Structures are given as structure tokens and as C-alpha cells.
Length: 132
Image 1 (cartoon, helix red, strand yellow):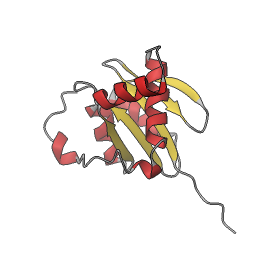
Image 2 (cartoon, rainbow, N blue to C red):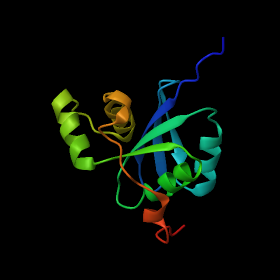
Image 3 (cartoon, rainbow, N blue to C red):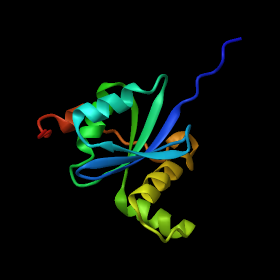
């Protein structure tokens, strides 16, 4: 009997210079430079299905989202306001990039199949907006 492939889930806090990525498989947070080569190298390291949750952060998330969608990955765009309310509701006070990556991941998996977070965020929305 074939082993069922589980979807890797990532919570990603985005800034202008880097991504803080919480990976559910390793339970670790790692830092990836926010440039196309680094993002592609990082995403190449996954085999099988991957879902990532990303907080909408100015325009800094667009590069990651564009690359992930082009690779056929599932992307959930998380509203900053709702994430802050979620943080308050579960009582997390410390706000760091590392904590945010974990929180974004927790927010994603806290909903059945991520259905409450699904966003129609197609590549067409980003056409012509990338400035890298």
C-alpha cells in the first residue's frame, strides 16, 4: 500500500529583506532572503504538495506569492487586521518575526482545510506589478 503524501504547511512572515518561514514538518523557523533566487532555491527543497500562508505586507509579499503560484503551490493570503485580532484572542503578547511566522501557520491550520482563509489571488492580479 502506498504511503499517503501529506501537504507541507508553511507560515511566512514577510519583510522587505527576508522571509521568516515556519515549517510544520521541522517545527523550525528559518530565514530566507526575499529575492527571486533565494525564494526559488528554498521552494525547490520541497517535494509533494505545499501550502503557504502569507501575511499581506505592503508589496513585499508579492514576489513570494508570484513565485509560489507559478510553481503550483497553494497560497493563502492572510489579512493583517484579522491576524492581529487572532493574536489578541489567543493571548500572544510578544510580536517578533519568528513569532509571527508561527502564528500565521497556526492561523492557517486552525481552520478546516484553510477554507476560511482561501483567497482568489491569481497571477493576473500581480501582472506588471513586480519591480524586481
